[in-house]
Image (cartoon, rainbow, N blue to C red; front, side, top):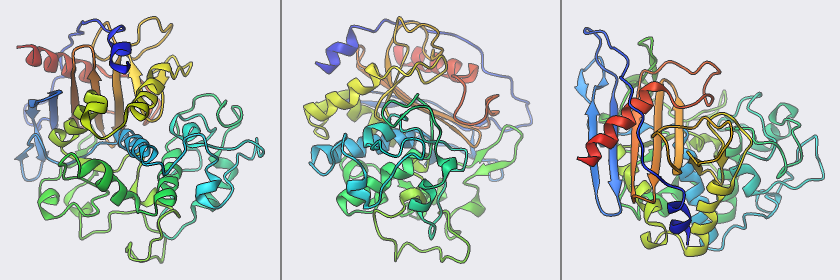
Length: 398
């Protein structure tokens, strides 16, 4: 049913645009695009260097911080726990957390996982969204700066907020009794044969040696340079707190795993996640009901935004749905929709998108990009991204 619903929307077209010129004496930014269908995964574009100092060429499955695609993985974990009967999407999250999460503007309105995953809880990143080890998530959520008055949770205007992800991940921990990074490993990475991690926790020496350094467009290191890898502390830690997870209690503050953007994974492995979503219930990871709820949430989640996030569901997004007035979410050209999630942070642009009508998809990362005019997590797809997808589609069609 879900696949047929998506197929009715789709048509094929491309938008061609040249890549920005790069100075001859500047190593090209690391860029990887991997295509996939229900059975195969194919690297299409692999160019640039993983680290400018060593000059090591990037490889197709080198681990990279994928930014907000991490939210899609979080949503996938949530739906797998839903399948296991460990969470209810519409239940008041205080039942899991053990403390009352309420908007100061609407103190009588419950907050649910649906509200949080769909960015309709009324949360704000104005007071920051990183809660370090040793700090209190409960105290953070009691701060007025963590909220905005755009309506009660569930009916609040869509406002993209990273702060919701630490809350969701903490709820998932509380409901399961498992640490968030171990949940992701058990429910997503291990079943798909993926070697990946969050904030470099447990990645191991091999992945650390192949880390892709993220550079800003001005050339300086933005994240994951050699000095920022283990044995350096790779999680946010409060002053005076030891950099150790030995005493961490699941269900207290999963912000330390950066569920909003901290997954490190190679593009070949990320394509395995896209492939599982493309296959739907046939992948064996989600039941029919869970998958339908998950996928339809993106297609039916009209946000009223005229920017990138026009259709957003349970940490899953649809782009290029025909007949959406004023929407500016064109990545592949006319036609649609494509389902997945974008990412943007630390000079990196990334995406995971699949097209069920043609039963194929693409994952990509490209580094050293200038920030969008409005700052991170704003704006629409860039000319570089559109040109990259045009190249990838042309290669996939050969």
